[in-house]
Image (tube, rainbow, N blue to C red):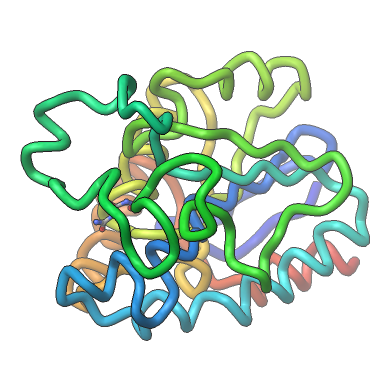
Length: 218
Ligand code: TIU
């Protein structure tokens, strides 16, 4: 079985039961001049994930393996946005440079051009930080027969962490690719990744994408 050197130890997986999760690589979070940057965030910290993720997608797709994309956002009437979330993120639903912020159907809500889904790849729209909450992800993974997840996307300590924790509690083994996940805050990136692999892999495993690419190419 393919095995990747990772922290805290080797991650062994079967190509038939492993899915690639690409979390919230949306224009609102990543584009210069967008929502993320308007909050004072440094989007370059997220944009460095684009190139390695594009390379990973090329190899993953060429091997015929499943890709699942997610997008954080809300219905145009915001009926799926809890008031508690809106109070602390009042820009949601407001007009921005790329349409209404984090609203489904708007340009800014969609995935960046470089990483657009292709063919029949699944796209999950989620109202929360975790990809399992209020979505069909569990059923989709069960139907695929997935047991392990390769986790990528943004942001490391928010939607990536929440999703990895949700997945881990549901029995999935998660490998997080450090060069394919990004945080606006370098210290959260570093510590967020440490937290996943700490205590013998309390939430999962961490490695860099070249280690995985090498295994898939074999
Ligand atoms: N996708 C995701 O992480 N949503 C966020 O709101 N992240 C922040 O870091 N704000």
